[in-house]
Amino acid sequence: MKLLQDKTALITGASRGIGRSHALLFADEGANIIFTDLKQNEQSDALVAELRAKGVRADFLASNASDFAQTQEVAAWVQENYGRLDILVNNAGITRDQLILRMSVEDWNMVMDVNLRSVFNYTKAFAPMMMRQRSGSIVNISSIVGLNGNAGQCNYAASKAGIIGFTRSIAKELGSRGIRCNAVAPGFIETPMTQQLSEEVRKEWMKQIPLHRGGLDTDVAHVSLFLASDLAAYVTGQVISCDGGLAIN
Ligand code: NAD
Image 1 (cartoon, rainbow, N blue to C red):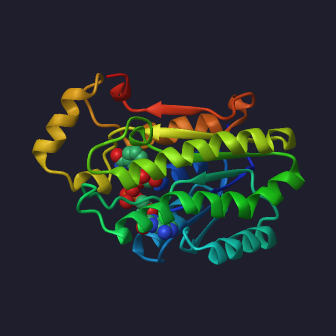
Image 2 (image 1 turned 90 degrees about the vertical axis):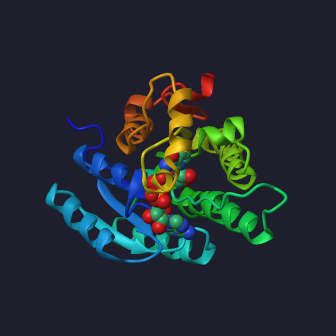
């Protein structure tokens, strides 16, 4: 029996990177997949095809996770076409790094909107459905930067720390309805987001990671798979770091 057999999962911002990896792994475990991203493109089309080839239902919806109204439309579409949602992975996220003295209000607002407001939008949109089902697992992708802070990332750190407070609150609020809510805090993961960094910065990171390598997007997806599945039936309100030990330094 696969871990997510016949469950339906929605992953935000999943055309590439960590979200894509979640979609593929969850499909391997038997889940039907709905994923979102800002625009339909070759990446999203290819992922739909790859997921369907695994024998599960798969659909892509172009939707901006920071837009409340668009998120309501996604929930209505899922209700009409799938009738339920078992797993929600709030993955969409961006960086707009800058030191505080140079950070613009736009950089601050953009990161808070995409990283934190989106988690509110999707949780609010899907909570009624999960409450009716009396079951559901919400996995929010935070970051170790939300736990430890990072110079030049105050907007990102605040958004990811906000996700942790939100996660714990929702775990308390919806636990009695059979809904679990947890967060994953990835460290340095090899994705397009981190591939933009210079070789020098990358070397500095590697020195600080006890496992001496960057994480893979599949490393993060495996932690989420545990939290999404019934293996974690008694786990809620937790933040699990997936960082090669980086945060213990
Ligand atoms: P990525 O940039 O490769 O992928 C993010 C995806 O989200 C992209 O496809 C992008 O188009 C989409 N997206 C952006 N804004 C969106 C919006 N408003 N609505 C819908 N989709 C949107 O990034 P990634 O490295 O795969 O990161 C995924 C998540 O993991 C993010 O929340 C990120 O903060 C978190 N994270 C990443 C790392 C890392 O090292 N890569 C570390 C810690 C946490």
